[in-house]
Length: 256
Image (cartoon, rainbow, N blue to C red; front, side, top):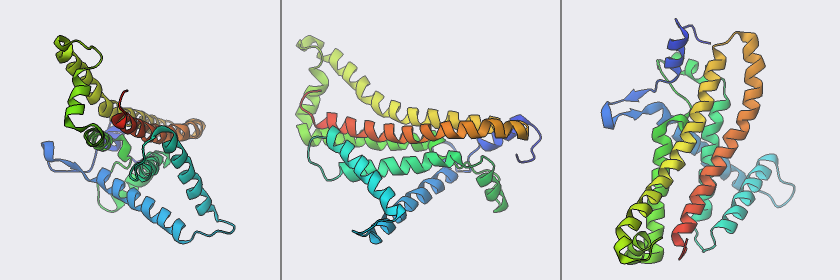
């Protein structure tokens, strides 16, 4: 644990972003840096595996990439029945990208911030999925895709009918239907983003609290929690990907 004056300052230090700007235009530079680095890592890793791919005995990296690809492809095929060239690659990107972001939480909490301090940065929060701005921006992107796919499949008139004619069929109740459907529509990206943020923020906090304990307790608690947290890291990436595909599948269905 870094030498700070109190537990409160230690926690505050680890939860403070490297921010540029103020107010609405403030940007968490550490989150942006980690998101871009992990995105480039994903692209480079999979591109390298494809370039080195062989029809013979595959290497470990090729096996890993093929397993992930087949897993995501089979899942998308079961959920999204319509033919679309974007859904599969997008689902693969979401799963691996979010998984890499979440996996940063398994690195010791002082490692990356201490390295950043050596480079002259007083604060550096290294877990991008625990930044509500990152989680909600991804969820907002999913929301826009849902709107686009709905308009593409049903048109503007069909979209309006979908918002106003369900669940009550009487014309006098169309305004009530609109309010209910609008709340349902807006709640999708909010719940999608906050679920990822909440779980990863909680996991990050537990690791920080463990780091405040004596060294022998850190070893006794951090290893079991890290092993359990691996499940959370994978599960949250899986849930974000599945819900994205489900929402898009619902958008193109005639009735849901």
